[in-house]
Length: 426
Image (cartoon, rainbow, N blue to C red; front, side, top):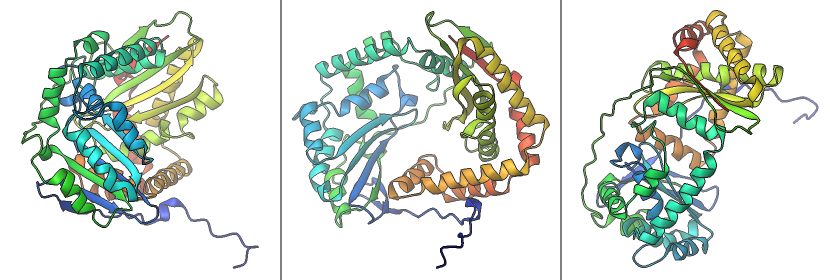
């Protein structure tokens, strides 16, 4: 090797990206398990996924509260004892509730898997839902809500979702003091019994797995029909967007900056324009070198950061432009956003800029596939949305081949300023 000669630089778009396949096996009771093995490190990630998100609520906040309280005590152990038994092995058990799904994720050293699975089994199969834990949960969440309602960005996020989807739709529904007060343990137990069942469970595991991982999972989760059989049907919930498009809300008279949100509806990931729009959105406001950042942060100095994102919801999607700016420049920032929208409609994206974004996006995907934990997350998103690896490779192909003409047509269709909801909270 001659170190006086610089190595050849290879653009990210030149890489042939491959999504490492998963292995699938089925437990004795029918639970599917998706696994991506890696021997690089002696660590393991195990995730149980249930159709138990806010989409299936009959009462506001019961999905999130149920998911939270499952880990806070069983008939045999308190929440403190459970946490101590997990932390003793240097492990971490996290739970999350989203719109469609709820998850429990265990991170641990491979050698401790056999000791931690009984704890995880007890948490999932025997939650207590004690009145004391619910009372504590209500108090904590109401205090957090009271603090957050003083923040303009928090208030803006709540309102823009309500305007887009409606007060009663899961995508637009927000927390409230009354909703927390109305939570009852019996309702949470009923939600748990219906949604956290063996036939609604899917398991995703990644990392350096014990040789007997199948036997262990069968022992603790595959040997019985725990919680019985429950058929979950996906409800057809109508979206009821607000009629008005422009809003100004005064939230903090002593605040020095305001929160700006511009958003519009957009087709979901099954639409042919979705993957193309990911490229256009990256150019517009999807990375640090985007047009919004270059104009509104670097040139005008109105904000420390501004970005545009596309929601990845199951039923529908949305484009959301968000920033916090000085109160005196919020309106000026909105005008600059509209200028950038119109510019993409009227002027083709230069080839040099498009190539830069192609390399950025492909490079980000390469980074997202670095390790078994990241790979299983990619597969989980595909599987839970009834997609396969073809969707992944089609997205790669779109990034590499989309033309400036296609981007301009997309901008004309989806970037018209009059289609956006406009909100400023100061």
